[in-house]
Length: 464
Image 1 (cartoon, rainbow, N blue to C red):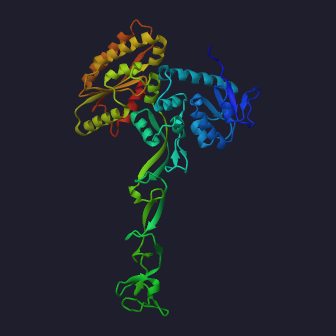
Image 2: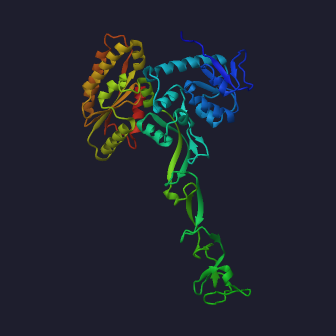
Image 3: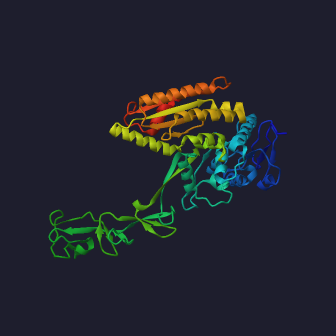
């Protein structure tokens, strides 16, 4: 019989206590991991010790996704791998754990996460505000690391930055707050760079600031010491005596001299020298990498709910509607907007549909009736969608339909067909599904400077 209350355990010998509640306590990690599995963990250790303990716990399959709260310092590793400080009210842990357990049962349609991307998605899915956080660490060549990806990697070799970009391009993850911008060596990818001043003529490192003089008579420029002869200023080139600055001579802007090639110059050039591989690069040739946090996107939440297998119900059914990934759909819509903005033709239409309460209805109907309802929904949509139309499902309830070469008249025909199909679908069934529509036709409804993202946001307001 499934438990209704969690087994809560404290790790550490710190002073943390829940008023009026006596909890199991383990002084060290070995004792905890050698015992039976706990449901919720409270790490009562200083931040410097809590971070490594959290990493060890996340590497343990039993605690990979568990709720783990840090009672003392919240250092960057605690923020990246933990669930924050414990609730002030001890009674709040039980409902939080029940919600966690319920969401775990819904993930991937009840199938445990196996592959790396599934494990990361599951960790984020189980937390309403879960993020893949970047942590600064000067011991690694790129200066930053993602502890969550390392802990869930299961000893797999993963290029964290490339994987995050791939997940972002697929629409499963979305970029969060920008943390830093790095310059990296183009040869080895290291961020350990030393920026040095060098001679712009021969790129030698041995340069120095040195006062110089410029003779107006012959134009000779040289170190000031070469002009001093027995207490007077005498040009070493033409032997003219220099008496008055501004009329006989001046001090040029070139204040640097190269001891290798004897060149004078105003400003030194800058070389970026990699401390790992030794290669030198011009600063403008370095690779630029933005360091960001990442969070679960709408498409990622949809994938977590409906499954990662090819047989996931809604993905399998809606896949017959020429679905495009989010970014591909936005690029296509932007292209259509640019065509009509410049040439005023060909006209195209965009239709947004929101199936209000779709997920709640499917949950209430059960597996068999849910399949039947989705089949009917897709059948009605296919009546309106042509082979040249393209769709995108940006969230679990919202579908966008892009129809090239479709003017206001054609758009109205499609709209009426969908409304009629929706009425037939819900007639005589105990469903609470409501179909809301938002329509747009270019160039008639087009606004200046409005791109695809702004357009979808504006129409999305009409869908609620």
